[in-house]
Length: 515
Image (cartoon, rainbow, N blue to C red; front, side, top):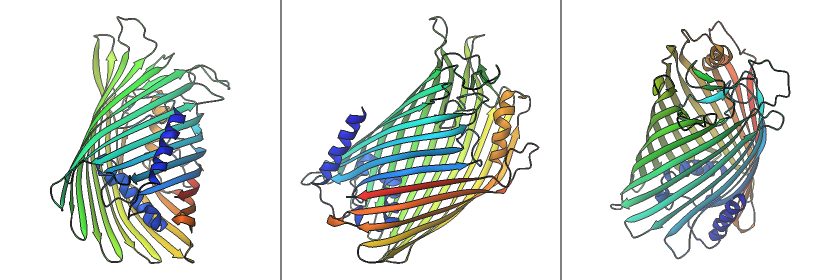
């Protein structure tokens, strides 16, 4: 399968040699390239019929990055140390003498994640689902990911463009020295879309998609250290304090998420604005391999949710600058149910509701030392409730952020750049009330998550690099990125798992060739 992915990706790279476009990504300075890549990902790529829109820059690149991170200031269910390699190649090209625009990418990730506490279903949580396996002891994950994406858009006539997209994403989580749970996960996301140009100013797009996810967990009782009987047990978390115990073989996890996207894009001489709605209805099922009898129900849990987003983009073009505004408002509501053998029915035991708002304003200055200024603010309010124990876990925070980007051309072939950013994570409120759930979940997981969630932090980010112009307009980008996370204010809980000396550091070194 990997060989096929690589072959497909090479075909798209080769096709780019026969394309022609007036707007190439490699003609831009690094910071402007980063901005356009993000704009492509967030605004156009999600609806495949828009990948040939005239606002989209075309590109071909190959990239390699080394990832390193370490520190104690980390979400308790996440790793405390990571060391790995990411390789990616991608191309977006309009075929010469045709109405086709094609995109292909291949990504390979190989990392080692250490000190993953409690969580035995690493990397699978999403959309507010409460379900994952846990255990008291921490462990090590070896993680491999193969992610293949392909998209195509065809301009049928002057009014109508059709598009399609496929994402094939496989993940392998395994342990060489501790095989308590080895996890294989597959996500397949497919979309079809259509864009209709009413006139020179108005474009309407519709996209229908579905994400299918399946994970296979295999339990094992090979423990390299002496563990008590309690810490060696497996538990399936089903809420806040609610769990299923006495698990032996493992589970199959299945998730299906139909998606509907609508977008209205208005373009004028010097500005463009788009309004998009993205609606997802998802269901998740956990199937117990221990249950093999026909007359018994092997589906132990169910989780259903609705995820609604409203996305607005506004770009204002000036002679020597660009103003870009982005707002993303989200709403998520989900509920979990657990199968009750007595009575043979699914009992609702968990609910989650979250509201989010992300806003950002970016000002790009062309041909200037000060190349970019960005201001933004993020807000999240998440409410969780376990009906079995009346266990409440609510929190809300706000994150103002600012960044400055500088670009300096040393000569016609060499430029240096830097991107400085600052994000302040301020906790507005945390309510953690286990009520009657005084059990192992509260002791091992709940209290520690509550303590981490109530911490206010500051994140310093820095990206430095060199941009080299090569032959045939190729460019080579060398960079190093650092993120440093530090405590600014601790919680006032009776239990404190973190101190003001705790921090977290990410370092990414990369090499990116545009050709």
